[in-house]
Length: 113
Image 1 (tube, rainbow, N blue to C red):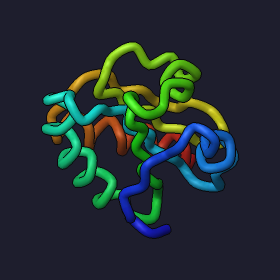
Image 2 (tube, rainbow, N blue to C red; image 1 turned 120 degrees about the horizontal axis):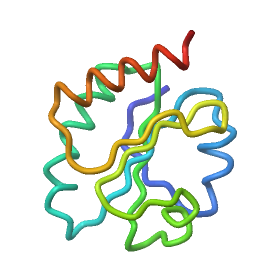
Image 3 (tube, helix red, strand yellow; image 1 turned 45 degrees about the vertical axis):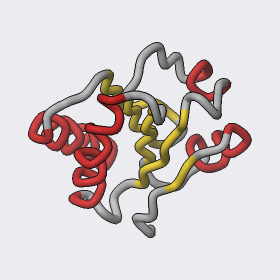
């Protein structure tokens, strides 16, 4: 899996998230959201740490209205880890690097068990 930063379009949700053969970390954000912009490098570090174990897809909530609604996202930043077509873990709001790394490790261990 390449660690390229990818934006998710609404018409790709089922194929690239629900049907993905690997865990997918969806990052809901908007360009005007200060906490989102500050949290993005932390998310990038976490994804880099777990390279090969998950894929990161970003959802710009200004450009994609249906996907946040479908995922019941009510505030940003929000991260949702999907595996096997199901939501495994959800993080709402900006988290510290250590908190995200620890909880992501636990969630991935649950998926990989």
